[in-house]
Image (cartoon, rainbow, N blue to C red):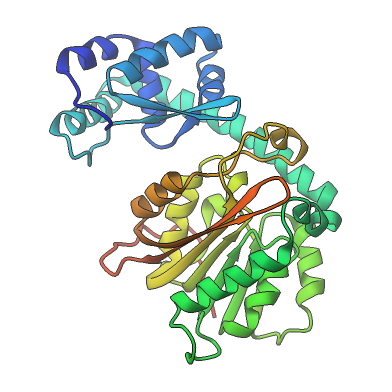
Length: 344
């Protein structure tokens, strides 16, 4: 937390059913203020007043991103502050023991899931309409060449540098492969590539692009990056190339990526630096307006990665950033998801 929490401020802030519901929503993910207002069925000004009280008390934190404001909890059961941890535990117990409160919290989460599913459907429709021109759209922001050269150099250096095996990237997962451009670029350096994407239209184009590769060296899999369907520790390299800004909950996506990354394995994220191009939410279905270095570092650390090199590549309008990290050897993998699958 940014400052020491005062018990009387915290108790005063907790003394309201709406604020208790907000804290339970925030217990699992960062939310836009507009999402909170939709879930609660209250006006945004009214919800903003509740949020101000939570933030002033130290129970929550705000982060501005373009025209949107995101909200995250400042407390958790693993908080370094005993008071913050105790409050988080109290709210968990309250949801379990208070039947009416628990029912309301469950309804709130279901409502939130419906809101987010609608937005994800909108994004998927957008991808279906623009799959053929995806590479061209991406090049409007920065040329592919410098990004791809920097990405390849950073990953190979992280994997052992010059002189290592030609398959030094090992088993590689390309999350949100799109048209398969990056999977094709890095395939010569990997033992096996899984090109993973939610859009059937994107995978159709990727399949055509990758058909010249050996059949046993590449696999195309359809699925949602919010629920990566592979077994724990399946990959040595996990890549997110211009895809994390489509995530409603990027911290959860990176936690899923950590689960399937082997200890000592590496992650690379290529995405926009934080910006204020609000129009990209509508025209290109972006959920996030880029990321700051501190955001990515915090998410990587929370997921069990050790952050490494960061590089900035100024583009035509936006700055593209490359972030890398390695999976901590002492990290404990999360529980296996249902129907997890082995990777060749």
